Length: 558
Image (tube, rainbow, N blue to C red; front, side):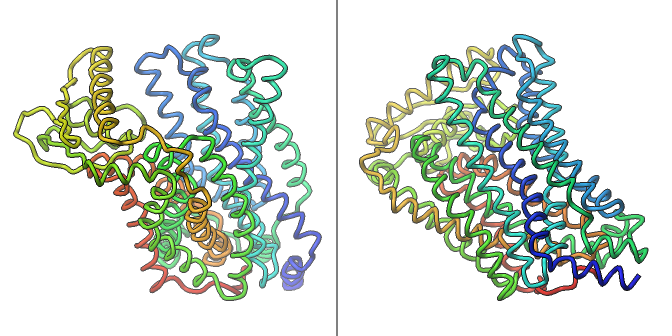
């Protein structure tokens, strides 16, 4: 047995084998991001295809498909595939996950439209999204563990950094395939072809990626650490009970969640996703400019993941990750103010010259937290605040008289809102649109820009602020896979590591845009939504500083 373990321990030293392991593992995680960006970029087309003409119930199903399946099922997949990975093996678990994930992506490209299949169409889409979320729950943990257990002790951070950089590869692949498909179909079949049927091509394109990924993973052997453990009879027969029922292991799960994954969910999703929402929704920057900025930032991030992973091999995981989350903690508010100053200075000028005030009965105002798109928010206060939040305008809250309709004061002008609760849906929609139009007209007269002026944009300055976020996010995310793998014992590593990871990214990170918008609408400040990721990041900074041990150099065969 000792000879087998020794042989397994020597396996990571084979450079060519390690390159194959890294490439095969990263290919699967690239699927995750390719699918995410393709689906996100084509949401408008998909909505028209699958949700057109749906009644209220079907609309609710559609909303659940976009939200619930994308995030809520990740921890479930983490538990299921974590148990498989700890009992049967790493290779088998993440071979299944990539097959499920890639297969579901391809099937989305083949699904019938609502016009063809009626209510079955969005139900099938929902099913595919559930399968994807379920599979993603086991994909990342398997890939990170497999690479780390093959890598030499002094190169785990650098090697697993390639798994992290798959996010950048996925983004570029998605944007490139969509762009080329649009351009090609536009020349061959006309401008309407893409929306009619061409959107399916990016999904079907993943079939090729799936075949390559499965082929590469089939050539791999089981990880050395797991093979040695099984040879010695040290595998866990009850991963759940051992990982979550024994305090010595449960405290590691809680430590991983609070020290690393709280910050990961807040920092990374803010840097790469919420920032796009902020630029488009609040600063009114055109999508083409946002895409250009984010593609440039993502290109740099692809290098930095590996750089910071390598750095963590030299100085330790803890100092690199702590530096990243601390940098973001310090720069959340200055950074977003900097983006405003560089991309839409006219907005800041208007807010100073003609501040906006909302005068409303506090009882008439609700917290507009709506992750599934079900709530209507049709009180006079909600209509007024929603219009201002969507316009990207900060405002001051002033208590009004009980029962009084909300009023919006813009400079010297006052717009009185209306209460549309209880009105038929079409009437409520018309009333809401009327108030929103009046508010927009009042804002325009007061000098508030309807969109950011390209002539006044300082794009290099904006890119500089984005790079601050990118450095913070990659410094945290680059070493995190190696640290998570090293934190847990081999026998429960897959189960124990995957759950906190997907709670942090799926639930903390996934709720960033919804929670941030709700906070902005309630508080009246377009920067107030940053308090949500700030709070989670602050918790992680404190826990990491005082409780997280340094894991660099730990024996993964323990």
